[in-house]
Structures are given as C-alpha cells and as structure tokens.
Length: 335
Image 1 (cartoon, rainbow, N blue to C red):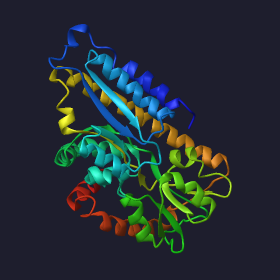
Image 2 (image 1 turned 120 degrees about the vertical axis):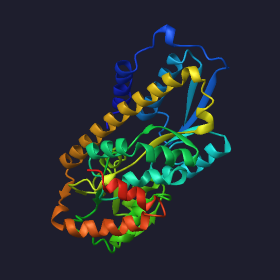
Image 3 (image 1 turned 45 degrees about the horizontal axis):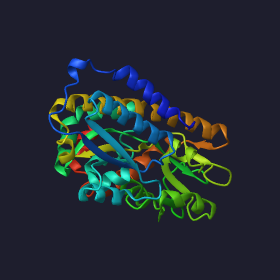
Image 4 (image 1 turned 90 degrees about the vertical axis):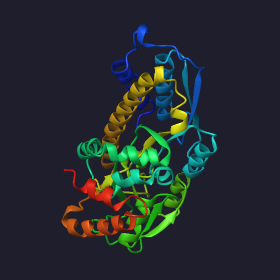
C-alpha cells in the first residue's frame, strides 16, 4: 500500500460527502465542549492514522468546535484486549477494532467473518443492510454505539507451500491471541495454531515456526510477509472477510450534545464509506502486487466440497461461543 494513499482519498471523500454545513445548522452546544478518546493499533506515522485524524478534524469543524476526537495510537505491539479494558475503565471512549478486539467487545459482530459464508463485498454490504436491527441489538447490548465498519480486506490463505485442499496437518498457522476465527479454522483443518503478536509474525516466518496465515492481502503485503523465503503461495479465492469496526461507548456517545449528533453521525458515516472504499481497492491491488512479485496463486475450487466441510466444522466451533447460531443462520439466508 502506498504511504498516504488512504489518508488522501479519505480527505477527498469527506470534502465530497460531508461538505461544511450551513451556519444555520451548526447549532452551538448548550453544554461545554466534549472530547472523545478513541484508541487504535494504527501507528501514529501511518496513513491510516492520518485518515482518522482527518475524520476528527471534520467532526471538530462540523460541530462548531464543540466535539473533539482525540485518536490515541497504541501501536502494533499493543493488545486489543487491553484497549477494550481501557474503554470499560474509562481510559478511552471507544476504539477502532480488528476482529481480535471485536471478540472481546462485541463478539456477535464476528458473524460476518464466519469462514466460507460471505466472501465478496457486495453480499457483505447487502447482509449488513438486511441485518441492521440485529446488529444494533448486538452493539447496544454490549454497551456500544457502532460508528461504522472498518474491514481489513478479503481473507485468503497464505502459506509457504500451496494448500489447495484443507488438509493442513503439520502446518503451523498464525493465530493472534484473540483471533477466534483463525483458531477455529486451524482446528477444523488440522493445522497447529501458533499464537504470536502481529509484531512477532515476521520473525517467526523467518524461523519457520509459522508457515501459514489466514489474512488479507493488504495486511500480508504491507507487513512484507510475502517476501523471499516467506509466504510465497496464496489462495486464488477469497475465503471470507477480515471484519473490523469502530465502536464508541454508549455513555460517551450520549455526552455528545443533541444539537451536534446529526453532524457527528454524518461525518462518521462518510469516514467509514471512504475508509472501506480505499481499503477494499488497496486490498485488491496488494493481491495483484503479491502475484506480480512471484507469489503463486493456488485454486481451492477443485476441493470446494472439502473446504465447505472444513469451514462448516469451524463455524460449528464458533456458533454459540462467539456468535449466536440464529444470527449465523440469518446471515446464511442472505443472498
């Protein structure tokens, strides 16, 4: 991913989607200014973090300087479990979370990452529109206001050797501490789950203690996991979606003066539309980059039935523990 690309697109999208409101609509808050602290793993010098800052700048302007979002970079070495604990303790008001953080904060939302169910963005968007009321209940019950989806691309299987069939016994699959989906896939395919923070994966790839990763192309390429002697094979087909979302504690959302909530919500919606558009585009480009740099794509379609069975076992593990079985059934019914 080119440095600064997402941030630039984000700013341009905000100009187009969330133009400054007429002064008559920028009502002044009746209470004092509100500052919201939102944590993220994005490094402070990354284009993604600058994207968040652009969103915060827009909110500040469109609320008449009455609502400020302070984004706090915890860096890639931090644990999202710690970030969620920080929200609950009052250190943060919210967070931009990956699937690992959602498992702790609102695990039901991970249903959209259930392996083998939703593998393309069109169906993903359609399912979320159809299941909007279900999602509101999931987040509200967990104590959060959902600001938007921040997904991380299509999930593919990257490995040191081709894996066209889900017979992964003997392979060592990376599973971050709270990655319920990758853990279920490892178990269902016979792979050995190897737990490591994202910052340690490169070293373990070099040491050959990890040889398989379930991740998006934008993650693998940006972290250089596809380079020489690392992950030189990738599934041609998308096997799922890497889910992410931005959550704000309900109590913190309620602190936003009523006169400014509409502007705040518009900016949040515009931010996540622009963010997802850019990441989806860059994920596809990074897949093409990996192939152009010698990564070999393998076809999983010939063993489609075997993959369906393996992913079915993984979903059985996840269903009930991570997300409700009824919610999964509802998702599977969306075409």
